[in-house]
Image (cartoon, rainbow, N blue to C red; front, side, top):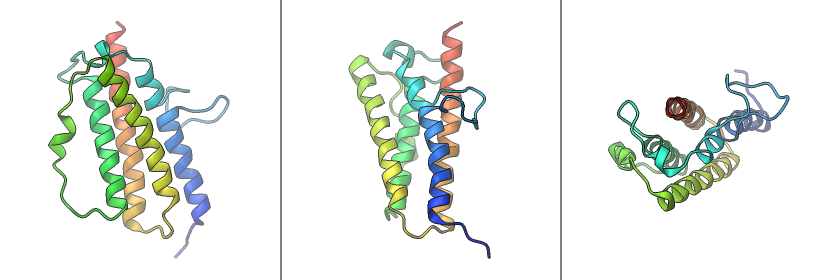
Length: 156
């Protein structure tokens, strides 16, 4: 069975996570069609009123809270959590005022930092934690796309 060095694996995971959250760097290849934009940069440019506006039955604030909730729970699972999660709780926030929106955006920043620390601290990569790391990227990428589509709709 072929293996990959931890440093190589993390370098690639961190590259995609950075692009997903921060956007691609100037002149670097991109895994996404929209260059230079990530989840953090996208929500940074949205005010609370736009974050709370319903488009197709949901809001940017709801997607943001859900994505953060999901990531926080996956970090807990990577750290040994075994209790079930009430995933419906991840959709409880739909609208926000400016103070709440600022706080939510800040917690997304902290969640991202926590993900990087958590993944860096894993000594032995196996099928489960590799799956969790990939799920973090895929799930956040989905919600990044949803938020960007809602934001584009709002700009029309």
